[in-house]
Every structure is written in structure tokens, then in C-alpha cells.
Image 1: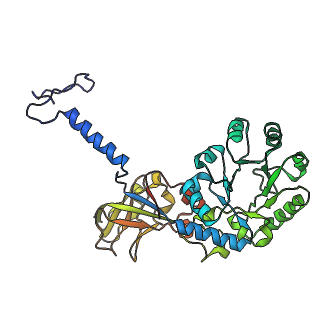
Image 2: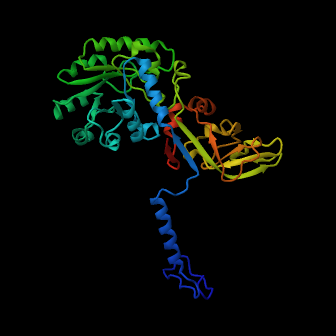
Image 3: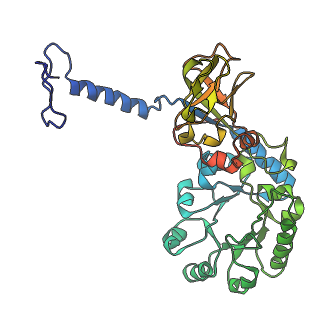
Length: 387
């Protein structure tokens, strides 16, 4: 509306005239509001109704336990932005704890880590493709070569530089087959790797892969040999060789029973209450009306949903906590919201925080999702805090 009360067409290029008596025009108010918003962003004051708190000491404790259990040097997989929690922060914490070997998937991830101390090594697990040559020559990381083509490429572009090599002993994912090891002649191999397919299970395939790798180890000279991830470490020291490569367990995942009671929870998720309401007896809650209240039910609507990585597998199965009280998820998880029952917590109100049950083994059972998925799907809307 202008001062006369006439309405401008929606597509009108004409700007409204200032209304007499107002201190600022609409545009000036808008500009000042946006300036203030920008200042708050710069100062880090923008409110976020989701919090992800990462326990630095827990990551360090988990790494120490894994190294002790393996009995050899332990590296750290920090790929996928440190399993969704922050690669740079994780790397800094583990360097402080004594870790000196780190693993990422791509050269873009290597670059994102920035400069590392001279005595720290970084390995790019996907090797060096045709489009990676410039990055591989400029960045300090070592490629882990996976194919005959990558081996030939590395011999051509960096014949004097060390590399790692992956041997496929049965997972049929990345790596050269044992029948292709003659192609490795002339390489300076720092670490020769293999990777277990079923280490989180009591599978006969574990022993089969171990024997295949031992045969390759006896035939291929390298500075070090490595096979075990987090679950592989738990299989025992026969799988340790010279270096282990934990990932999941660093971040609070429990890959096998041997790690239970030794791995600390690393990530804690909290969400703010948007609204507290009563669902009347007989009425439903959420999309699909999958929850029906058997009685008047107190519920809190929380500011978290599948867009934040709290996926639909938690529908009617997940839970949150307020102090000692468990708060069950009611009905379906939606994009931005979930409902939890708060009858046991009468004091909870709009604006209060509750903790989502995100202990990885527990959350995995609730949702049917792998512990890996629970971490790496966490979204960007969290206020991320390292303690």
C-alpha cells in the first residue's frame, strides 16, 4: 500500500513512496535489519535450534584404545569430513594425541585439510585418476593406487615419489588383484593395504582374506603393511600388521562386541522445542496419521527432521531425553520436525532443549540404519561445537 492506500501490481517496478511521519522508509528499515542480521552472522550469533556437540577427548580416548588393542601404530580415517563431524578438528585432536597417519577419499578432501605438520602423512584412498594429476603433484598427500592404470600413471608423473597400494583380497571394490602384483615393480611403496569385507561379522571370509594378504605381503616389498579397519582391529592382532586404519570407532561407533564398554560416545545431538501441545485422545499426529493417542497425550514438537539427518527410520522408534526421562518419538519423522511424548516431563516448554538418543549402537537398533549412516548424514543446520 502507498500513502493513499492504493495497491501496486505485484510486478510493478515503481517503489513505494515514503509514508509521511515515519522515521525510516520501508527500504531503510529493511536495509538496517539486514545489516544487523549480517553483523550477527559475522559474530556467530545467529540462533540455531539444533546443536551437535563433539567430544574431543572422547575421540582421543577411542584412538588410544584402538592403538593399544591393535598393538601397532594406528592411523585415522577422516574421510567424508571426519565422518560428518569435522575432518580438520578431528585431525587436530588426533595429532595432539599422537596420531601420524591420516586417510581421506579424494584430493579435494586432502586440500580441505590444509597444511599438516611435517611428520604427519596423508593418504588419498581413491588413488590418482586422470583428473587428479595436478592435485597429486602439488599436494603433499600420497595416492593409494588401486588399478593398473593408476600404477602406470604414477610411474609416469612421479616415479621417484612414494605411494601406497591397495590389494583386493576378496571385497571386489578397490584394489589390484593378487595376480596383478607384477605391475608394481619399480614403485616405491610406503604402505601396502588390503581391506576386509566382513570384519564386523564372524565370517570365514576374514581368515580367507588374511591368508591371501599374507601371501601378497611375502611377495611385494613395502615399508609397511595394513589391513584392519575398526572392526578388523577387534578381530585380533593377526590382522594388525604394521598399521591399522580405524574410522567408525574413533567417532563412537561400536563395530564388534570386543569394543563394547571401551568406545566412548563422541557426538551428542540436541534439538529445541518449537511447541508443546496436547494430542487429544483418539486424534493422530504427523504425516500418515501413524500415531493415534490412546489418551490425552502431552507432546513436544522438536526442531529436527530428516533434512538434518534424523531419518525416517526413527519414526515411532527413536527417542530423546530430558534429564532422566525418556521421550519416545510419536509417529513419522518429517523434514524439519518430530513429535516426542513428554508426559513424564511436565516442566518442558517451548524453547527448552532436549537431547536426541544418538548413542550410535542404540540409535542404529532404533532406526535400522548403519552406525556409519547415522554420522555421515547429519546435516548443515546444526550449531557445531567442539568440547
